[in-house]
Image (cartoon, rainbow over all chains, first blue to last red; front, side, top):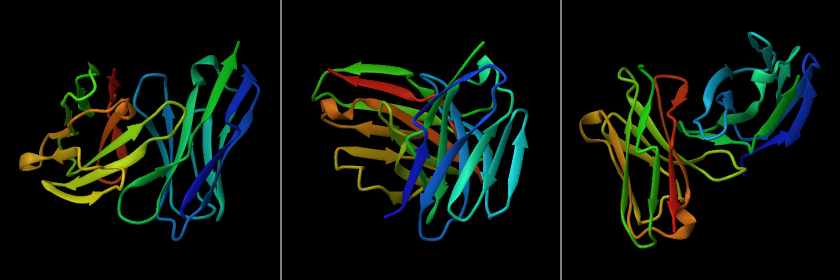
Length: 109
Length: 110
């Protein structure tokens, strides 16, 4: 069965304290790995798509990387406005995405 | 704003009633998806349209659920005879390649 596991479930950081979120996957034939940000009561906001091992993408303080078994979302010098739930998803067959449960990030000033 | 829009944003209904939600995708996107999200979980896929054709349906989409996309534009998701377990956020997404989500419709079944 295709599975996506995110860790940790929750992460508390001080402003400026860099860290990484993990997304590990067990799937048969990865056709893309996706990162989304979700604020409370809102829909997920698209961040990145990664297709092959070794690929990296950056946006402001966020950098996503991909290996054959996992992806990392690195957050450099986070600010309070980076507080949100970060969702990882994979596409295996068809077009539907399989999501993990997310990591809830809290950044305090 | 040219993003995905959903209406209503919130719906409270009594058990056994029918409800219908609407999704307007990004205009140039021919693919449209419905997902359901409960508290503390990631979104779960329900169904997918390419233009007006419904091409994929999840096992989560019971007989009480029906989705349409007439003329390949907006889509509707109807839930008949709602149950308390249907309470969730219903999310719509559209894509040409990457999926962009709308704000969701929060359903509460009393």
